[in-house]
Length: 402
Ligand SMILES: *Cc1c(COP(=O)(O)O)cnc(C)c1O
Image (cartoon, rainbow, N blue to C red; front, side, top):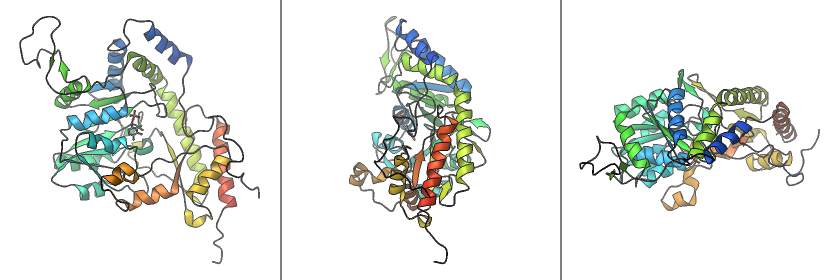
């Protein structure tokens, strides 16, 4: 049996089998160039065009495009009325922004554990974590699979809470046949380069609720309005506007919007390629007893942003760290998504301790993200599978007769 290469031995191919990578074509470049040669670099026509398109794509009544996904989450919490002393429930297996948005509003993030098969937030644990101070739930569509939105929505509405869906991973995913973006009270997207569709940076907030939309819209431009219906004093003239609340500048540029508009022309191609890669990975890895694949709920028709491979440490003589290093030695640059949010020193200093969410912690110790992106060739996919097979075969723990 061939011994896997030693870690640090062979260099990782130059960016090639990284865990994720954007796909930019000539149409994308032309779209950005056109904006640069136009009159509007911000607040121009590409913004409205993208907002309309996101509404059509998702079925949401309103969309606001913003500077990034973190700004979108901050806006969502603010519009949900999250303030000092409130609690916001989210998952620990997410990018820190899903919890930081509660902190921005002076509220306390409360972590609910994940489902051990789907890795998404467990509605039953959310129910257990609700207190009189819980104002909102931030449910993350981890890896692109929709969180179990129906039970989460019933729970939130029963208790008068707002469901925010952090859909940074799930542009192009459907839940019960409906596109993500039209289901939760507020949905947020991210267009960071590793996500399915990119604007370099960028985000969006979507809602069907008119009152939430008004708050979101105000907060994303300084709390300033020109809308006659919102003005508190009579207009002074054509230049007149009023600041009626305290907001931020979370606007997106027209260069970003043009890039995202152009990327959305390729969404169907992005979806089908990502689905095909996931299908091939699942098929191959289900035959390897040393690893576990992420399970999906039937309700989610998923466009996967991340592919998580979970190892079974009891069947291997190496741990996740060594497996990860062995993959790197095979030229496969994995990553780990995510370090449980409350493990971070900032959260430790706020008083969070290990042990809060045992299923999330166990997953963290056993998982890594394999390369998954549009431009991967079939050979790249087979190279990843071959590396996993080789490492599992070599480091298989001999359990016969023990
Ligand atoms: C990427 C990401 C965000 C933040 O989006 P940015 O656009 O990078 O600010 C939030 N939540 C999750 C789950 C993410 O993966």
